[in-house]
Length: 289
Image (cartoon, rainbow, N blue to C red):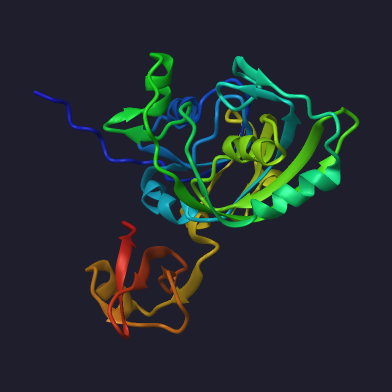
């Protein structure tokens, strides 16, 4: 007989500064052990070699991760021109080299302008994306390459600056969820008539969770559950409405476009509501009290 999993007793949000050399799943495992809680998840995978902001939810906060995942992500890193790798980053094997000695920072900025706004990307083979039930990086390790349809993403900002190293350019990117910065670096190299790869990738922000408040997995603070929805419109309700919300009722819409983070009079988060039909809203998540 299967053992029943005990209900979660620890709840909150941790803003982790992920170290290099571990996976995002490894970080989840570290926090499961540290907080003695099985119900743990993260918002937005970081490559093993990448560092920076990884938002991790514990207990009932995992229900709110979708509202963190949908936010704009910010990155800093370096693009190395003239060298392609099989993983599109510095951890891979070199597959091609190009003479790009004449490329200037103005040339690079001309191409980054073309890669800003709504674009399409082909996901790299070395990624966690699933195709027919299997992750691409698992197939890549077996030497299998499959067709990947392009995916729409949005690049809000793509800034570039020269460094003291020839053909190495520092980048800053703000982008939509699901953007592959490695692919962006590779496409930049192609746009310049050669090739490139990414190195030293660091995520500086996930929405309004910034690197300034992040800490390593062994010392990061567990913040209150409602921090997960701090970027949403806040609605405070009375006890009568709170009873309806607890039952998951459809309600007349509040002002604004939503989604709305809904709080009881005592300041406790009880739900997130989203637009439904004309003039009505419905619960996206009801948070157990």
